Image (cartoon, rainbow, N blue to C red):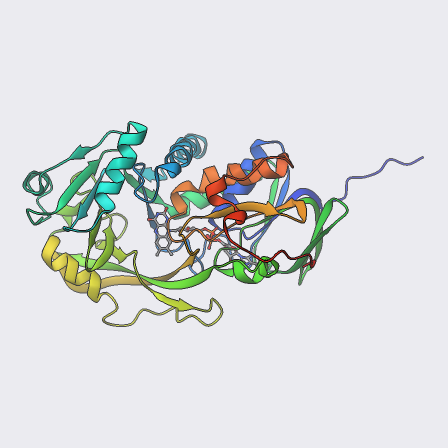
Length: 388
Ligand SMILES: Cc1cc2nc3c(=O)[nH]c(=O)nc-3n(C[C@H](O)[C@H](O)[C@H](O)COP(=O)(O)OP(=O)(O)OC[C@H]3O[C@@H](n4cnc5c(N)ncnc54)[C@H](O)[C@@H]3O)c2cc1C
């Protein structure tokens, strides 16, 4: 009797979409002793989806809801572990300044979140904040919250580090391999690609802005928004370095405008979290147009007068929005071995390694329940029984 050789096309899990959350899920699966095949339609790390633009804010005092705080604290711990394991810096902790015009509540909600979780912060008179960070000119009637644990993540080293860690733990990464269909039967899953069909015990779908198509059966209430990012020239780059200029978020009639200390490029990166055209991911205009930074420049002219109108660099990136801006991390109600993460609504990156763990836990344990706030059941979706 011959021995049965392991099937090289059979993995514990297939990860459909090797971007932010898919790479994090593969790393977490590996840490649980599970092999995975990551299918990525483009190269690993690219500018076509939601992780382009070099940097992402990480903050703990979470204005969106205190419920996210344990998740971001766990993610922060994992980002630090990744740095130790990869020997590469991924997180620069420069502190964060949340500013809010009268009637705007981002800073106040962040403070409530910090209070609920005992996180350190300083609630500062505007004049004191402006004295500490002289690049800012802050109106007296604005709120100012400083959180020392805020910082920014370097997207490329973060994603490469997680992919390399996953590969050391048994993941295989296939780039330029778009998945065209998937399904599940009898406890296993299959995914079709132009280069072949792959099978596994479980499927993790993390398709980002393509989730609407890859999860079409569920009729998820998500839409894609086109966002622009701007690296503006400044009066004196030395004033905006991470050791003397914080990440900032300014909530006002101009929108929710945020920015980073100067890092990597000799210009200040600034963007508006609010707004953005609803687009189709296949036809979206990936070029920025002159004048699209109007809101950022208007805010900067009042708040950071050293920001100049000249653009050093710009980029287009995509948000995948849910109606309540909370994420969707759940499993297929028809097949417990199909799990998915979608609708990260423009604020998911900081959480990635923790989301990876949630997805890996749902793969490892068919009874692991989703976090209610992130569950599919919060939407009133018509049940579907069709196989994809
Ligand atoms: C401009 C901008 C600024 C942001 N700022 C912040 C911030 O400061 N802090 C923060 O925490 N978050 C921020 N975010 C949000 C964060 O970046 C996203 O929530 C996160 O990157 C989403 O991860 P994802 O895995 O869903 O998408 P992605 O990282 O885009 O990954 C999805 C992947 O799936 C692949 N894929 C899709 N379909 C297929 C298929 N059929 N076959 C194979 N592969 C497929 C895609 O090519 C892609 O690589 C920002 C986002 C943008 C756009």
